[in-house]
Length: 146
Image (cartoon, rainbow, N blue to C red; front, side, top):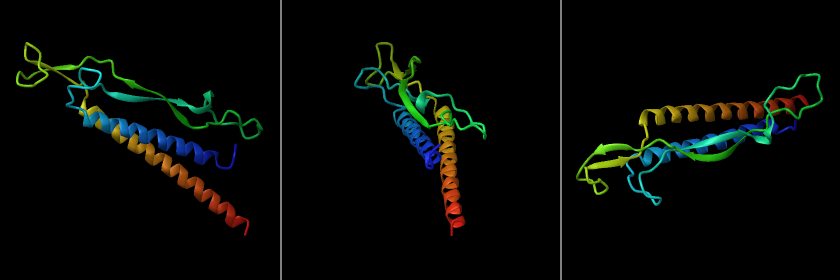
């Protein structure tokens, strides 16, 4: 494990949570979008994360010199679009209404988006705390050397 490995792991976690927050914000902004470039209503997007390095995360034993099993952070595998069908809302005056007066609206639940946003925010804060703790450990180690 390198000196800055913990900081790199925290940095990758903050980057991943920031992407998650961006996608949640985009989902909320498009909650009433009925027409996209692909045709049809906007579809909810969510990230799929993967552990970096493809190894299972574990804490190495203290007496082992093999540190190849430590975590290396997180990376974005892909951004997934929801496969849920759109909501049908009766609004005959809407320009995208069908012959029966129904409009296909994005199937985004604002309450679940807000819960995801709070979760992403807390995860980001946890990574900041881990990063600050690593910095404090380095400062303390430098003071020992004086």
